[in-house]
Image (cartoon, rainbow, N blue to C red; front, side, top):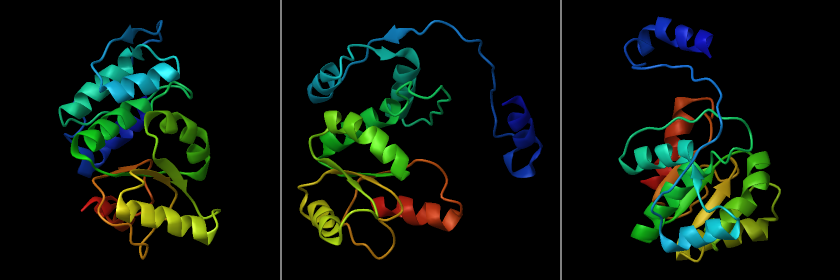
Length: 186
């Protein structure tokens, strides 16, 4: 990581953008409390999650304050809760719809986790039959589906109506693709 940080600092377009970098030694996990919407709290309780990790709470609080948050933790540390909880909070508060752009592998891994947070989340990927993809697209239009995990199968030319939030998991390779995907949320 130190080499990556140094490489970024040496690039002219990133000079002055890295404000702080610290390597923190491993330590025992700490839990923290967070005020949550009742529905989200009950969904987490169904997964036997009574307290979030401190890194999740810190990230959620930063996102709630419209700040950026970056998490770098080992696999299976539930990092995704740090961005899905604020996304669901905003969707619940505003009656909105959410689109998650990610890989097929993460869809398969996280769909069960997210289904516990929202009854109307579904996965959209190329492996689905055309009739199922059309059903999901229609659900996004009429509001019967409020959250979708998607691969790049849900691309330009597929009209999904107005979205309130788009989360990108990773960089799609080109700025144009990034703007196109994020632009789904108007």
